[in-house]
Image 1 (cartoon, rainbow over the protein chains, first blue to last red):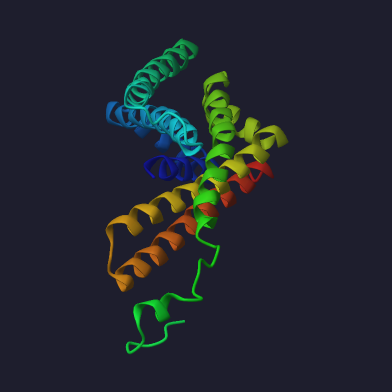
Image 2 (cartoon, rainbow over the protein chains, first blue to last red; image 1 turned 120 degrees about the vertical axis):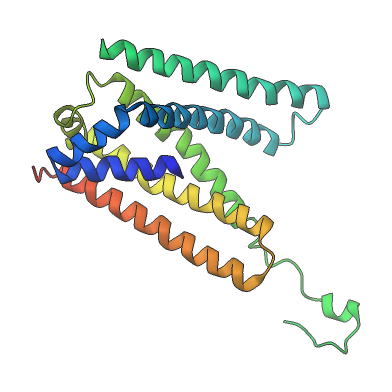
Amino acid sequence: MVGLAVLAWWLAALAAGEEAYAQFSAVAQHWTGMIVLVGLTWAFWQHLFSGLRHLVLDTGSGYELRVNRFWAVMTLVFSLFATALTWFYLVGVGQ
Amino acid sequence: MSRGESSTPLAKVRGLGSAHHGGHHWLEERFTSVALIFLSLWLLFSLVMLPALDRGTVGEWLGSAWGAIPMALFIVTAFKHGLDGLKVAVDDYVHDDGTRIGIHFFLTMAAIAGAAVSLFALAKIAFGAN
């Protein structure tokens, strides 16, 4: 939800003009904005991997306790790794 | 259609089988989720791959059909999926019919408004109002 709000704000600022976009950029690059964006990135990856896990569960497989627990933990591992990778690339491009 | 308080439990149930619409929302949420696997990854990779995120670069990207069309699809699908997900959460925890319908109404209006704002902004960028 926060992600969709940020998306709407970003697009609206982009459409509204130079000044509005500069204002958005300033908030996004402030450390509090960065925390929100990193959090959003993590929330996105966690939702994606957890969603994929649930699509598999919807087919009726993976309910054995050991298997279920393994993939539940793996979604967290993957999402943290993917978040780190995303920001590694983002910061890398900026330099 | 209920047959009234005086009828037996069996009479109330007989002939009132599943309406076969129950799975519709569930299935629709899966559809949007599968579509969003592709659309959201496209959006994230596009953002990461852009040489810069200044207004000119982003505007040029969203000005092209390869940027604007998937973005329009993402906006519609993401707001729909978000709305579906929130409604399910409300269904699970809000048991009073009136309150639930009221919240559903509010959420639906908010999602449509958010999508409309985003689509209008995208159209303005794509059709070059700068």
